[in-house]
Image (tube, rainbow, N blue to C red; front, side, top):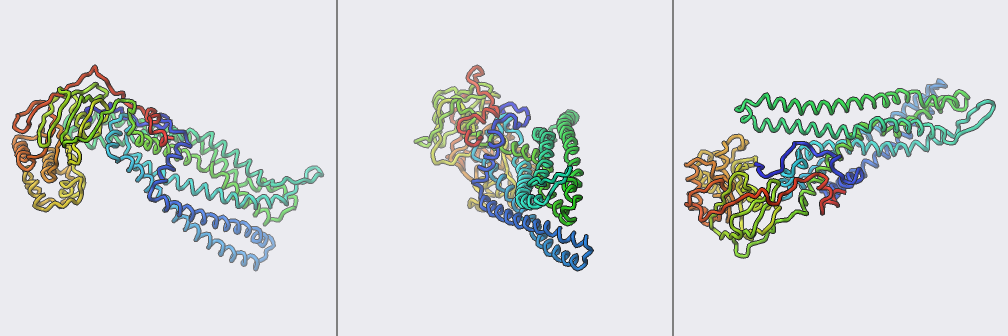
Length: 606
């Protein structure tokens, strides 16, 4: 539960909410993410390899363009032997290009795979730093839907980056290869107008630059709105997905409350947001289609129209014309790479912003409210757990203990009582190091094992044996240890299922899941246990078994227990009251722009 978390509006942070240094800042952050990645060296070698393959392909394309002149001249002369010879030359060139094309496709897929691995691992590493995922989840709008950004958006960014990056590299190398060819061909172009003869150096080059440049500029002007529109679409898609997951996770409560109609209206609202975003994208894509398709059809005849005056003047042969047309098309194809990829570039920029925004938020989560007061956390010199003038601040007020100084000795059991909303869960989280905002001092026992047991127990996927040993993995517990722990809490029926792999969170009831958590305590026997209201949900029989466990196997374990009401004094040595001062200091919910400006976040955000 998030009783003290910021109010969630379920609105995804947009790129417009975050000033991350602009496009250059986004690129720099992506570079930083990959610079320390374990796949960095592999990406470098793959990049070198694909560069070599593309250069070799460009040389093959130049040879193929030169082949045009003798081939079409042979056709014009009706020279059958030369025609057959040129077919053999074509077969050799085409065979080499085929091998290069397949090699480039394999390298393309490997770069895509490694980019996906590097980006996703970086986001996972940043997300699962101790306490960071919790702070992000409880930070309001800035923490909405991080799962989709790490899974779907990182994969989409890897795909787009690979396709656009390799495409741009190939276009650039082909451009460099054929500009010289086209310039050389233009040297023989002589124009005869009104009895005057003149030539334009690099005539075909200037013509193709003007033609492709005008198309690129027009395509960018028409397609630029796609950047914002795609970002908006992905945000609305994420909200729809989040709503569906929420309904699926709470379907029992929704069905019992007969709330299907209300949830349906919410989903229809979210779907309407997605459809409206898509309509805006489709309108822009249709306008862009007029430009790209129009230039595409005009390109069929454009190079012939440009070279036709020289051909009809008899200054070049038919083979020379086709060679010039081929070189023009190669240069134009390179220059019109931007025209063909305006939509993909807009999508890439939108996805890049989404990924870099969530990474900025993750990196900056540790410096949330840096200007606010922080609780001092220190190690206890005598192994006890102590509070000294502790105050916890939250958006709803200030939480205090009834005693200014409290020291809990090893093995002592203390009950902390507070009304609903007083801040019990807040103090529980502060002891775990998840809520640092407030004043005063907390002393934690040094070198001691402390286990935190929240209201809702978490059972990880895998076997029941792994769930009981969690989070220590393969800690050497015997089968007898596992069986004894389960029997101690009345779950002896699960002893035979220790190696069963099912979804235990769905297979077991909420009470059984909580008992599994207490069985885990019995197995690990920690020095301290801090519990948030877990006893209050147990029936009398289960409560008796758990209490007996604390009086026997866990007799030396210190206990801090949070409860809304006073309990019997059999288990607890003393009781402390927790109160809430709504007039005291409060904590302002963070904004995305605050994260960008937070001290310590600047290097990563820019």
